[in-house]
Length: 103
Ligand SMILES: [Zn+2]
Image 1: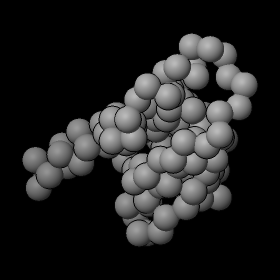
Image 2: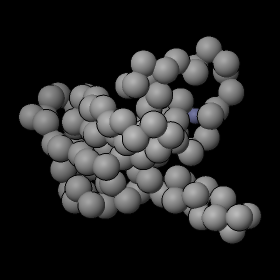
Image 3: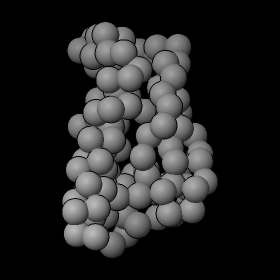
Image 4: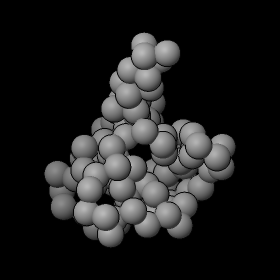
């Protein structure tokens, strides 16, 4: 799917295509490591997870389904956009709330 990210640090947005709902919600795109690449920031070389603090998902759009494994295809098609966005940002909101509690 086509994903739009917001960088909470700079206020910039960018889009990335070809990301499955599963990857965004639970896979390698559920934290800042791969989302940073969409902004041209490569943090993967550190080999340490950056966590979920900076790049939230603000929009997703289904692309024409390519040939995915049947399970992944069903998973993507059955979920509503709002559910995917909420799930993709879940860790981020927990972290932000944590920061607010410290303030
Ligand atoms: Zn990570």
